[in-house]
Length: 317
Image (cartoon, rainbow, N blue to C red; front, side):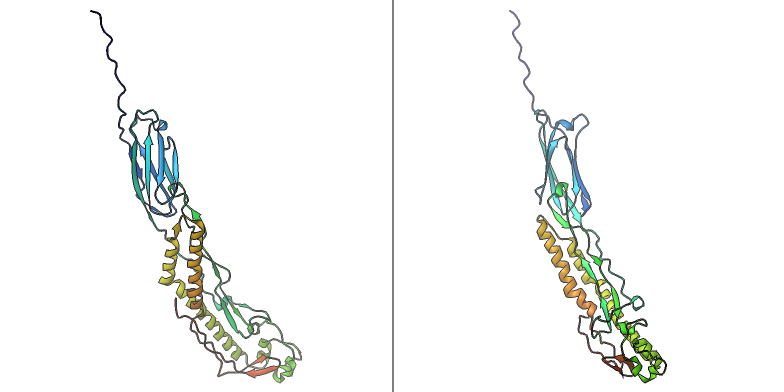
């Protein structure tokens, strides 16, 4: 009896490979976060197909050998991956891991409070009725940044607000030794006795008339008042209210760029308008000079005292 044809071996089942998905456990917002798949050394990852996805975003990544996925983190997410073998020799593998995201340590680099020693003087048409003025300057709203990798399509603030513009004290030009001149100075007898000049500034007339100390005392009071404005605002910018607002800005995120931009803008502009600027104003009594007299020009040269009033503002923010 001849040998019959033996039974051939059938195709085996796909083998199970010990794949491992590893992801960063925690990353700081704005830093890079990543996940990767590893396998025993005898497995050629370049022949396998990888499909990645992340919760909270429409971000996807796929391709042969695409065994890692990374990007700039925005918020907490769960990253999932499926590994498949087009040849059918290796069983498919699926797994997921959560990446936690911690906030950045944002701070507002507040301006140094303005000092009278760095004061400038306004021109002859400056701030009618004002002896001094404090300018708090302005701030820029945080720009919008987009994440990438697992966070592609998610948006956040790029950085904290930045102070810009002026942070200074401006004094009335009449307090400037080199300030603008006024006419009819020679009609003031004590000035005319020392000069026949028809035009002179306030400092020169008071110097000639022996009232320089009164003018200097008044200037010092004006400067102290404006410095008080600067310090009141600085107190606000060092407060928990500012820190809490900066923290709220840092945590703003979402999948709509316009919505994120609007929330960043509204949060900071409202705080600056409703809290910071009123704090710079402060509840300060304007300086007065009830005990001394000095020469000023108001249509004509007169010797008189200067009186002030109450300024209403917030005591803090």
